[in-house]
Amino acid sequence: MLYSAIEKTKHSKFLKKNTSGMIIYDGNHPLSPMHMSPEACEIVTKLQKSGFDAFFVGGCVRDALLGLNAKDFDVATNANPKEIQLLFNRARIIGRRFQIVHVQINREIIEVTTFRSNQKYHSSNKLRHQTKTGMLTRDNLFGSIKDDATRRDLSINALYYNPTDNSIHDFLGSLCDIKKKYCKNNW
Image (cartoon, rainbow, N blue to C red; front, side, top):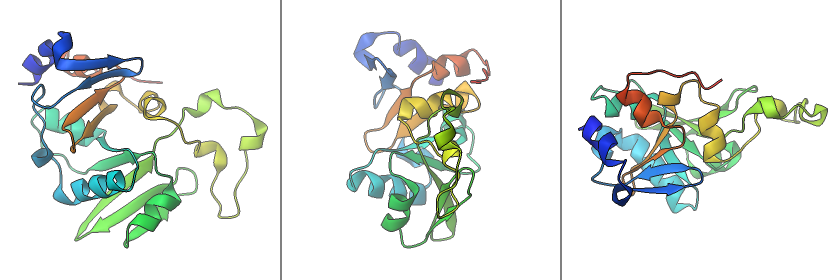
């Protein structure tokens, strides 16, 4: 089904193109919220209901598209780490270099990250310091979802899945890379 979904995306009635990439909508790809952890879906839903963008990202999306079981579920959002922590009772900010939030629901810990900008384009000395809480600002430059996609390690890990409207957001041609069995480094 993945390959037929990729073929369908060549036809405009199945997707929405914008300057940031393409969005493949419900029924035109093989994913559904059932492919994702219910606890992680709860996190995405709560972030979205609180006015933030939130998506599954990385290996869990890639693995689900390939028919594999994901080993973990990562969520990316435009909420900053403090906003994420305030939304969830069992949330802990970890890391000074790359701040992420571990949110625990039941026995599952979900890693929630803020969309990041690609640091290689930010060389200002003003950004090379620590905040009072110890966060290294040069490594925690928040950005847009498209910025976040370009800083991911591999193109096939730069797919964003929204379980609320069952859409896949592809900024780098990642679906085609999966179809071609091609693993492209984003750096």
